[in-house]
Image (cartoon, one colour):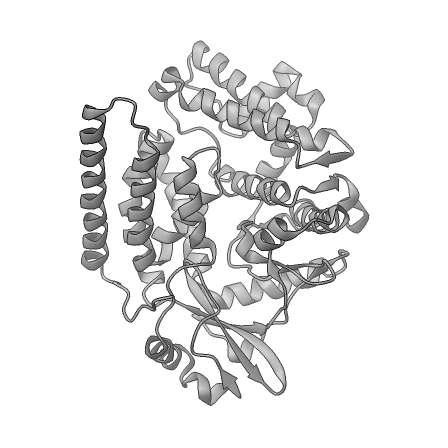
Length: 435
């Protein structure tokens, strides 16, 4: 893969790159409407593929939070056309890496020495490049190591990148008014945390220690003396990315074993630690030959405050969802219903969230749940399509729900997607044995 010698880090350089991308997209639309004028039956698939390629190509050269947003959107399989999902999913662990000279320069700046001075061996070609950093293989004192290097300028460009993405997000999610700012602040805060590698090492060690007793789950060891604010050194872990394992695996027992470890890991964090690994995409998990799950990235950790946790999980209980008075009281606590809502808005959003919660919490209503159940996934797709085409909803203020929903819902939706990819059947309450 072609390497990158320079990343635009200034606001002007990054904005001009996005403008270039916008010009390409405009050209794609002109071509599409030109073809439609000659043949009204032309589908949007070609337009979607061209736009997805041009947007991804623009973002991958910028890296950082702009590419991270694409990565997050790739997990929302019901939200975007398939062309976007496929292209944006490359942001998880397949983007052009930094060149060797830029790697050495970055190392010298943040570690005070070149990599060959710190390790016995260091491979200048990365083995994995994603949105915020890339991974190199190294050895020291007989140990095989993974060294994650953050791309230059990522932390400094988060605010300006989000400003570029904001108009798209406002249109896509129908956000209105000043209240929408709380959601962008939540994303900005989490992205800033993800660029703080000293914090990531601290979080990694704490969660690894807290969860080490869960069966079939492994973590690398982290080396603080070989880490800094932009570089992390950890054990090299052998295994396949979860998506690769899921595609190749034909052993249902092994799929269930991995899926159970994944479910237990997340439920233990959520219910015991009250903080959770909020970036559940395939690039953050490996599966070794024994079928153990290996968690390798703890940059995005979401703390779950008690005043959100309690009503959120009270609504995971079926009898509470079906108790209208109790249900609505929790919707107010979770900021889904508001004191200035009209009677029609109260009815509308109560019904919308009743349907959503009935569906999304259905795994919690059973002792075991089969995430390969296509009926469950078809229902999610149908519900998403129903409300995405609802003209009444488009007229209403989309600022619904506590800011904590952003990363908690992302966590659950990402977890469900991973379990669906694995085609795993899991015991829903087994995690309680490890509390």
